[in-house]
Length: 147
Image (tube, rainbow, N blue to C red; front, side, top):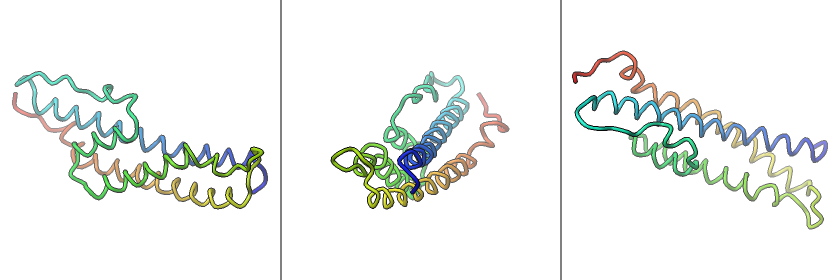
């Protein structure tokens, strides 16, 4: 590790991948709700939309996703991801600082391994959520439902 600046840049880069997972969940939820609206048509009011979850936490997004998907394995993976992301983003950096606020090199090196792992997991989950949405995306754009 070169210096503290490199460390903080690596933290920011890894956690930005976590943001992409959140964005992909929001897109999934938005599209699933659009499909629900399309299926319901004018049969009854349906006023839910993706914007309702614009500021939702990752935990809330996972809870909504769980209600819109039957993929229990993916839901479990998302919960594990959330727990690791929460540690890294909320407690991880302070865990790497010594009492004087300087970077503790040994702990920071271990932390970097976790950052690399979560970055890879974020990339994988991003794609898996996208593929999960592909299960219904065709109906959203190409199928017509009787009113």
